Image (cartoon, rainbow, N blue to C red; front, side, top):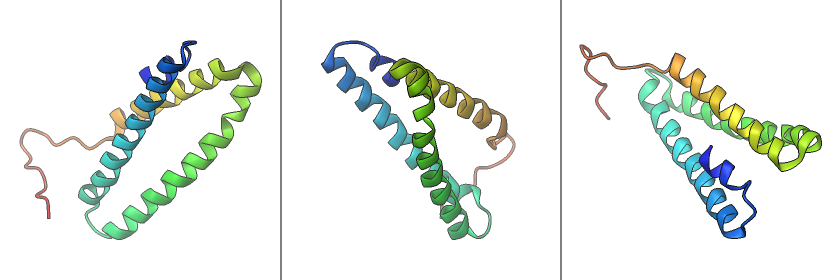
Length: 111
């Protein structure tokens, strides 16, 4: 969200930094999620990974296409607001559904 917010400022250097921060965050989260799939899937790990990658690219395509609506409604400010709303939604979904390892359980060993 911080990177997206930086793109609202009128200085080109700040916009470039904001874009770099936002892009870096996306790539870190994608790598983390992709890595987590292999640990979370108990069976059919290749299939789980394939489903994740397919959803990642489909979601990216649909999400990028859907941003035309806020662009028409309110320009770049509306696009940034929409991106932040989606990030908050993903945060809530992740927080509510992510498997947490309790203090009594041992984490699954890395194979």
